[in-house]
Length: 137
Image 1 (cartoon, one colour):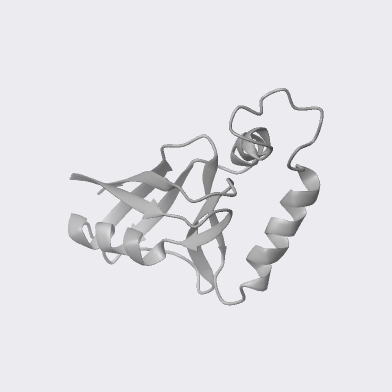
Image 2 (tube, rainbow, N blue to C red):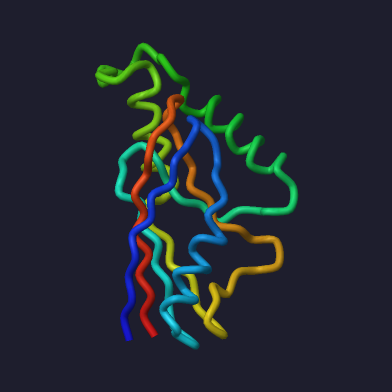
């Protein structure tokens, strides 16, 4: 059994956006008891993370760490076609991930107690991000 759906997530700019509920809906639509769910974001300046979902300060700390690691407007970057956050957004995406595979059990993503799935927008301005969710079981 194979099932796939595309989703669009609208962001307000840089930050994390929980998409767990949306992904769980797609897995439910697939009617797969056991299998795998792969989530893929179709962009080079956004990524996906599995992260703590109980305390938002975890995601704020991640954002501050990445701001220090890859600084907007750093003069070492030549690629600034879309602004000072352009190349840093690509680097952030490369350092994280654009695809995540999650086990499916009992027709749901089998996440841990404190885990949530997030789209991480790396650009500072709003975007619409396309995500493909594929379920195999």
